[in-house]
Image (cartoon, rainbow, N blue to C red; front, side, top):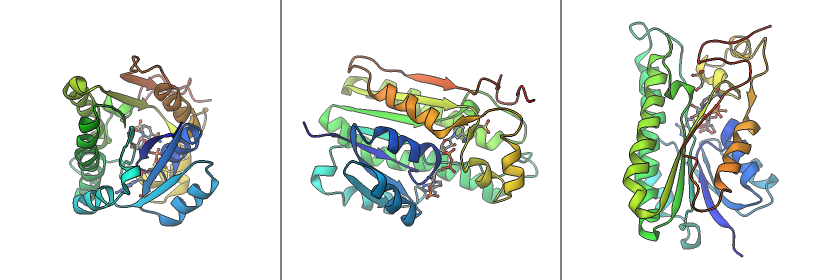
Length: 248
Ligand code: NDP
Ligand code: 8X3
């Protein structure tokens, strides 16, 4: 039987890349991101058909043009994983950079909406599909200095809930995934390449790895058709809340 098609944003690193690897036995993959070399490299290692799409989720016209330009056989998207996103900075709201605020809202919230607004009508038309939004423990809790990132992830959680209700009549599942601390490029991006500061985030305890989240996503998508894991939070054992860690 022909494999189903999954569309993964942010497939060039971290959770998105690990998810592509976990889903490759089960899906043909549309891999999205801005770093072309990484997409090519990933596609070459996966034992499945892949289709790379290079775009910045902030650019609506490019998002639409890329998705609409997919060959017909790639347009029957069964699974959309809205994963692209990052934190930018860790600052008090009254002191933070407006550029960082814009980046988080534009990528994590508006970017997710641009991609969803373009792909979901195709799922509605086919009356089938599954959308998995990568929110965060920051989409359930708020912590000081992370107010804007937390707001962006609370928006993702709200959008998951809204989409689940709205798409219920169309036979489309919507799931919200809320990881705690996962050792990816996330902190390197948050601290703008300051690797010393970034690595400190994961010191003194065992964080989650991207594969831990990817394995759970694979479990979610492989449930029987009548089962929807609608919302799931995954923390490292040493994490008690967004800000409480049992560090050695
Ligand atoms: P990474 O930095 O490793 O990966 C982020 C991915 O998002 C990259 O593939 C990047 O691709 C893509 N991306 C970022 N900005 C854009 C953009 N403007 N347009 C298109 N793609 C973009 O971090 P993670 O894997 O950790 O993050 C993945 C998701 O998981 C994010 O939504 C994050 O908020 C969430 N998350 C992460 C946690 C963690 O502790 N790591 C915990 C909870 C949630 P490229 O740069 O090539 O465009
Ligand atoms: C990433 C996890 O706790 O750094 O979403 O916000 S956290």
